[in-house]
Each structure stands twice: as structure tokens, then as C-alpha cells.
Image 1 (tube, rainbow, N blue to C red):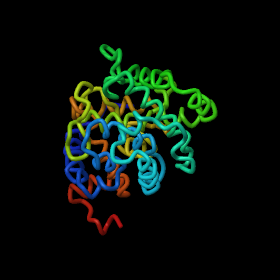
Image 2 (tube, helix red, strand yellow; image 1 turned 90 degrees about the vertical axis):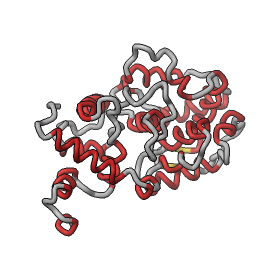
Image 3 (spheres, rainbow, N blue to C red; image 1 turned 180 degrees about the vertical axis):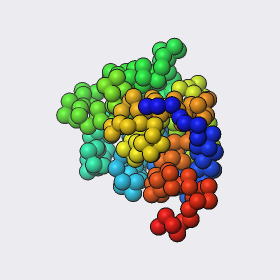
Length: 285
């Protein structure tokens, strides 16, 4: 990647315009984080956020439907539901592309194990965090999450579903962009702004990385921030560093707006021209 051009000040203005435009109830309702906003207790929001984020792959309509079905078994108090536990698979017919109800049963059981020894998921995430970068923190989180003691029935399921579970909880040290885990961290740790929650005050927004997937990768290519055709960890780190030059203390501030700009079928260059008065909506159709 190369450094941002002299147009970065204009880009900063454009990103702020997009932020102001897309941080709205209309776009919130078309995003899986909308489920997190249906709950008011922070412990429930932690649980709902993790379930919603790990299912955030594929078509957005399918994602929203799958998240709704997954959360239905957790009822009005998801934190209480996972800490009580499920002796059998509560979602035997659930499927979201590669993910099955067995995968979610494992996740619920491991969340129960987290809360058995830690007050919050943030406390668990931050174990050994001082002095570590996000790659180390996220790697440690994934490793420790799957090292927790769980019933033998869950261990047996994990052996069958190991490939799918590694997809849901990828490892940055193996090169994955970890899009959905970085998305979850954004939801939890960015300041409350009508979209993100600002729950994880100890982590805060500073260490966060851009949740890069194939859609956002196209935006980064259009910006000439990368030539890579693969959304990997290196791309996420480098793109975040570019954004850090625009928003030093909150580098992923513009992720939601960039994502929904892309979902609105805008190329960022066309959006830029539109906002500078060089194009009209009719021209873009």
C-alpha cells in the first residue's frame, strides 16, 4: 500500500459527509447491529452482539433472518439464557450457510464458561492485554475461548464442527482479516453514536481494526489503498493506519458508513463526485 495522497483532506471531508448521512435509523435497521439495540442491559448486548456479528456473512437479508432465528432461543434475557446453559442443542434445524445450530450450541456453551469466571466478555478479552497489539489480543481471545472447560458433549460436537468453528472464530496469526470479530469489537468499543454501543470502555476505540470483507476491499481498491485481491489481516492493518491519519483516536469511525455506502451500490469515486456536485443521482442510474 502507498500513503494517502494530497487529496486526503478532501477524503476526510467526504468520509464525514458519509458518516453523517449513513448513521441513521434507516441504515441501522438494515444492519445486524440493529438486534443489539433491541436490548438495554449491557450483559445482554454483549451476548447478542457476539451472536449477531459471527453470523454477519452473506446476503444482508439472509443475515438478519438468521440472527433473528438464532436469538429467538435466548429469549428476553440472552445473558441469563447462556449462563443457565443448554443441555441439548436448542437449534437442531438451524442453518446459516456454513453455520449450523450445533456451532451455535458450542458458542453458547463457551460463553457460559466465560461468564463462570469473568464478569464481562470485555474482562475475558482483556486478560493479559497491557502492552499487546490487536493481533496478539485477538489471537489470545480465540485461543482462550476454545480452551475453556466445557461438557464432553460440547467437545464431541467441536470435533465434528471444527472447520466451521474456525471460520466463525478465525485466527489473525494465520492471516485472516477476522472481519466479524473486528466488527464485534467495533460495536462494543467504539463510542456510543446511535450505531455503535460504547460498552467496552477499557478497550476503547484506539486499538480497533477495520472489519475488512470482500465488499469493503473493493472500496479500499477504489481508494488505491491496496492492490490486494484478498481481504487479509495485512490489508486490515494497513487500511486502519490510513484511517488513523484521518481519525487518530477512533480509526474505524467510518466503517459503518463505508459499508452502507457500498451496500447502496455506490462506488466511492461516484459518491465523491456526487457530493462535490459533479454528478446527479440521475447520472448514476
